[in-house]
Image 1 (tube, helix red, strand yellow):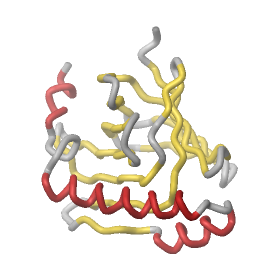
Image 2: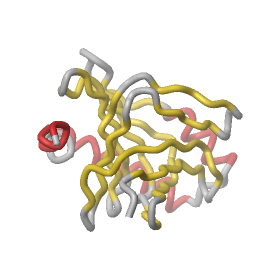
Image 3: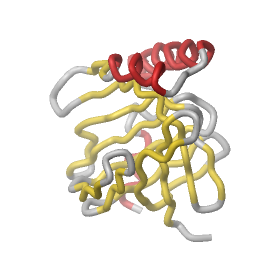
Image 4: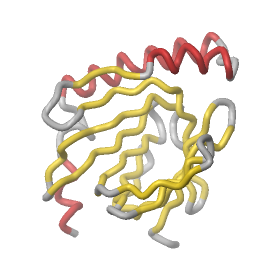
Length: 166
């Protein structure tokens, strides 16, 4: 099996939004950790454009919980984190996909954690006709994620740093 993973972000219910590739660092029944190297291409289907991403990140994709997390790494240290509230990721051979539900919890370099894109969540919940149950689950997932971050639970505890040196 290839160590390269194609990652696809979808909008509800199953609309291709953007995609990129990374290298699998660790795979369990609960999550996949992926190394995404500087210089990778992000194909943004919604904007019909291709971007070059000039940072290295460790990306966490939960197969059980409702979020993803991309941790930007500089000199072996996490300097910022971007979490998407998303339906649990789905792995199919060398392709992983998740449905992005717009709400994001982020920590910019040298800043505090903050929730962003609440307005996008409201707009897209109408545009893509999110069922009420899905909206409620996304909001609950955001609260659970905030608690996980506050407690410093994995993957927000730098436990995976040893994987960077493999």
